[in-house]
Length: 162
Image 1: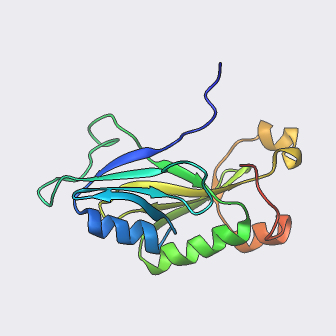
Image 2 (image 1 turned 135 degrees about the vertical axis):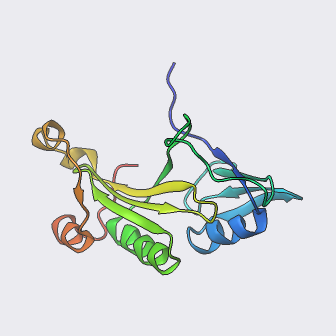
């Protein structure tokens, strides 16, 4: 008995139409089911029925206080196959004004962004497991992400661990 992976996440959003546009235009999700006030989206490379559910609660909703003065989810993380894809997402997120950070976690290269409701998410590339050395595992740390240097080191088309 073992959990294999996260199948989907559900978010409460102020405006489903606005959130749909963001997740479709910036992250490439597609709508698989939709009805008034709700939508279910699938990531382009996914075999899940859906990866993200969006439920509209209206403009009256306040910002999430999770992590500041209440418990709650910090972020969701989605993986991409190559560093070249990660660089493309960095450009898309930067252009949309959504990119809020980028970190090198040694075995994971990560972008951090916020959706239109300020909900944070991560898009990451994982170093392929056969290339992860004992030294990499023994020295966990967080450094600023230099995507160009990582592409030079690993190659832009090396498929990461998924």
